[in-house]
Image (tube, rainbow, N blue to C red; front, top):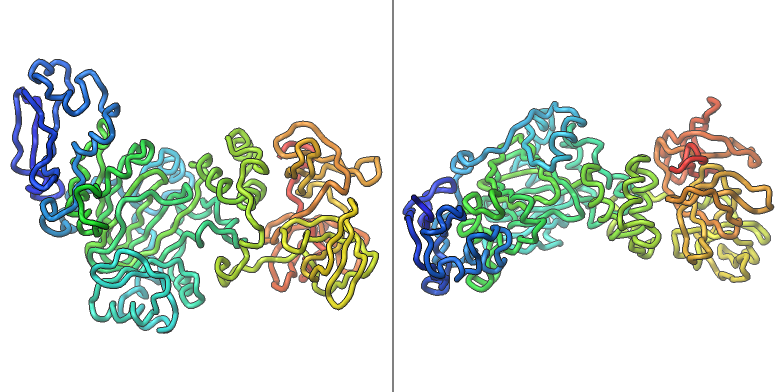
Length: 605
């Protein structure tokens, strides 16, 4: 005949069980006023079984805004928050972090060997958006031997800068922490947390000690953008080193990205919330309530007041958070949309990365599109297959020229955002000098990523004046803004001006038309072949990579172009090319190559 029960939050014995529980066979009233000091100290659950409603009298439930015939998720969110209780202060914080043994008792997350295939992992975990723990991924990594506090403390120059936080009370990261400060904390067993994207030259040596786990390898839809210097906020890869009590409060990872985290040393306590917390925008209800908590509560205060109770709290009908203990050598997979927290239970060392998966394509495409048109263009043309391109054309973020955010193109290539190993290949050939009268392609005003056809009217001391077909001019352009003009090739990806809408659209060159200076083009997302005048077509800068299909000149023959495939980046804007007829060139200049995107320019790509 039990219709309700209640227990004091602070009287827990561990993260699994509770004590001091009181059960009720009838309820005649429910007082929502808080206890001493305005603190929620109790958790109360009342049955919503209609057969038991006769045992609930008066305004017991109406007082908190819910009737017996209403579903849980229709409660007023503010009242729901009070019922759950999210105060972080001295009355609700009792004890420290749970032990690794206690978390292990609560851990029900499946463990799967790392030899699961990429396809199996995609179908069983990425598609259904299910967290899982992989085992054995790091068995052969050099990191297992090289990543110790003693070895790391002596590995990097004292003057290198890192992203970290130092001290017992530090919760905010500092971007310019010198390595000697972190090394001292390691040696002296002081509190610190290093969370760095490995963007300085010395830090990138860490990349030699690990590799992407096999079930995730090749899954990242963002990788092509990263390799070309187009980042959201760095390469989305972090080296994590921290002491007991360091970590992060509940959050959802950015940019619609899934995450993997491989632990090398120590133990981590993860709390993974049901997907409804993110979908229903309930994140504020898994954090400390500002009205009854310390100002800017620390992780340890959140963990003691809220984290330990997470698996006891119903955040949605039948949906509870789960506690997970990550052990050395294990790799945790957390899909986008699963709010999570992590606390280091001892001294830990880990590597983690975020990636965009095709299983979350709509959200990944939206993230790329809403951040930057250049990212979307790279993803659409170089990453997605025909089926995936059809999918994104049916989303609200299409056509991308209109829907996606446009930024200043060159902003992606400044030294702040491009890692040491990224080289952006320029469209121009430094060995060629334009002359007056030459037909050229020009970066308008010298500062765009797109190239417009024009004619050189003055060449003097490395600067150039250019006149465009519409009569406009550019003066004193630098050499890097001017490239040779080559005829457009079948299958080449270009921008075409839609004069009706007055906007540039991505299109594929189908073939030259019999009208002079006119081409048949297929605009992406349209079914009909259209005509475009040469003055309404422009190229944009691509950095070539091995495997790209190209049309290229061979040796000194400037009159002919031959199909081939890039086999290597030789540096200095030169590439090795294997031609379709079997010929090979070891060092073709960038200016004598054209990127061919569509293998069949007569079909919708």
